[in-house]
Amino acid sequence: LFKMKLKCFVVAVCYSVCVMAGKYSREVNEQKPGGDGLTVEFRIGKLNQVWEKAKRMPLSPVRQAELHSDLKIQEKDELQWKKLKAEGLDENGEKEAQLRRNFNVILAKYGMDGKRDTRSVENNSLKDHDAKEGDIFDDPRLDKLWNKAKSSGKFSNEELSSLKKEFQHHRDKIHEYNILIDAVSRTEEIHKNVISPLEGDAKEPELHKKHTDLKQKMRDLNHGFERLRKLSHEGFTEDSEFREPRVIELWEAAKRANLSEDELDSLKEELHHFETKVEKHSHYQEQLELSHQKLQHVEALGDKEHIRKTQEKYNTLAEKTREIGYKMKKHMQDLSSKISGQGLNHNEL
Image 1 (cartoon, one colour):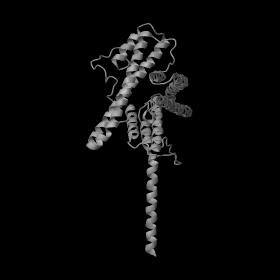
Image 2 (cartoon, one colour):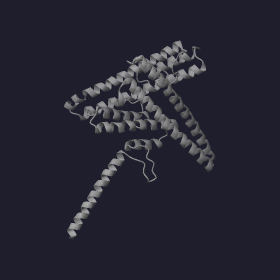
Image 3 (cartoon, helix red, strand yellow):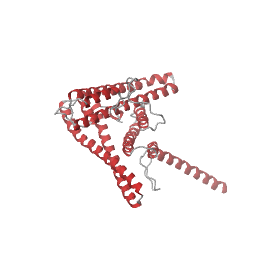
Image 4 (spheres, helix red, strand yellow):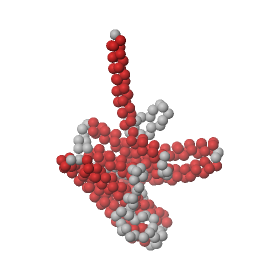
């Protein structure tokens, strides 16, 4: 009887351990807010780890909010992919590889990949370029074009401000492209080292697609630079459809796509709504930066009650900025997918 009781006890303990192990494994990968006082931002464990690390880094409030939005987009895509995988719709692992690459790009973009960032925007430029006063874009072609436009007398202060925003956006796209090239190169190097020749043959279509995507992004960059060159020489036209660089970029891509007139008209209307979101997001980013400066000032004064109230206002504004940033980036992703027809494969940085 004692042996039977002992046996039952051992079985019960083993069962409990297995259940707990399974539960722990699931919770690590798909975390949910718990009642233990800890706030869990993301349902996926690795994204939480990145977010917790980011909070300990000297990222500006706006940069931190941008990272949060990017992680939210990554979370949405990963959860969507899990459903596809469960339905057997990613047999060749192409979407899974894309998600891994997107995640690596996020890490590199915010300096969290453990590498010193040498992927400057000058990677595709002349190396003997000497920095001059007024060079603000770290790229000789952009700086030359900008200085010429600035001294041309063709632009009002408001138009110069809009033009500068377009130049900054193009600079960021070049940097992101270089990060993506680096991520793809590292992925290929890993494949070369760990897969057999037979598996390598199977991977060829996937590698071909990556390079096709990169070529398309390079074409988009070239189109973007041509637009800047034309703007710098001819100025803004009165019938310019949009003001925000990201919206302009989408509209230019739509005009190059194989869309009917009705589809273009419908998209134009949606882009106007999207532009309002982008402007709202920019406004909140500016307010968040000002709020952070005020918080630092109040903290220096040392009034605890004043600090508490200012911190609460800052936290609320930071949360709102992250929320609007996510909605804006999700909308941009949806619009990009509608134009390109790439669905989950397309993930804007």
